[in-house]
Image 1 (cartoon, rainbow, N blue to C red):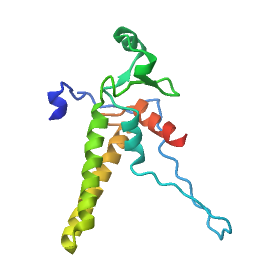
Image 2: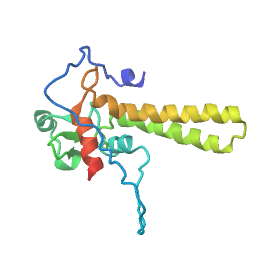
Image 3: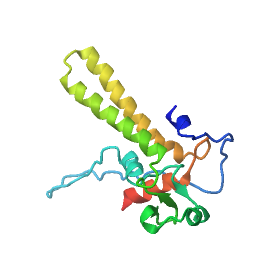
Amino acid sequence: MKARAAGYFMPAQQGAPGSDQYEGATVIEPIRGYYTEPIATLDFSSLYPSIMIAHNLCYTTLLTAPVKERLGLTKDQITTTPANCMFVKSSVRPGLLPYILNHLLAARKKTKAILKEVTDPMMKTVLNGRQLAYKISANSVYGFTGAQVGKLPCLEISGVSKIVKQD
């Protein structure tokens, strides 16, 4: 409802597989064994949604060069990716997807805080399911931008998220 109130509309046509290919996240298999030196691993909470929020990646902020010129946007007002995709910074126009992701992640954080306080086993199960639903929903926002077929593929968004993650 917030999207409609802000004047956004969904595309009417369904995407079809094209020549552009999207490569998903890199998963590195562990090397099993005994190690005498400490091994460190990093786990970033909500990595892809956080990248999308930080860089204001959204259909509503994706720019073409002619639109950038017509609007008179400066380099300080846009983020240019290594693949030369341009996105308006949130200070110019907050994206719809980052808005949604912020709300999903805030709801998950709140639910996890309540979960720590609850003692009833049934309520713990319900709240854990709820926080997992928020997590999956947030991650699926990134996922559907990389879908080969569907109503909302946008390789400019999903590709940037992967590039930023690997840096």
